[in-house]
Image (cartoon, rainbow, N blue to C red):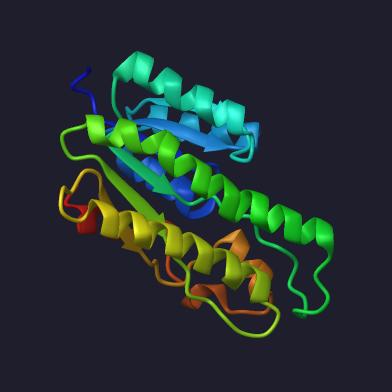
Length: 217
């Protein structure tokens, strides 16, 4: 097992995921997972420019075999995982609850619910192998008109992580943390509120630093 700290960031290519990857890079080797190769390469450039290092994993978290292989490779190379920050989310179309199509529902369930539920048992042994392994669920309590599918997905993720936290509360291995950033000027937010004054929103890098402070990092 290596002494180097290893952090897995799912949904690392943009927004809060990229910001937390950059914030962690001075102290952790980053395993950056996202579908967009170009954005991951840009993230890697920024991490390297700041003196950090990353392993890029351009894959879809709904690819069960790929994620299983990634976690197995992580064990083979490092023997553990110190931190997992789960920011990956599929944002379905903003639509009335009675208008969302089957394909959109299938993607909401596959990305936001099934993949999260499958990742937990893949990642848990790696976190337990670390001295203080921690999993972070990035929450968003947004509700309201046209957000039913998104809100349902976040509620399902919230329930999964809350159950995991209750199950590991006594042993503390791994530690499960829920973190709710302030509304940020991200692409996801822009889809929800296209006419919003983005100058009033929080900066993702500031919120990433707040998460690290919460974790004591």
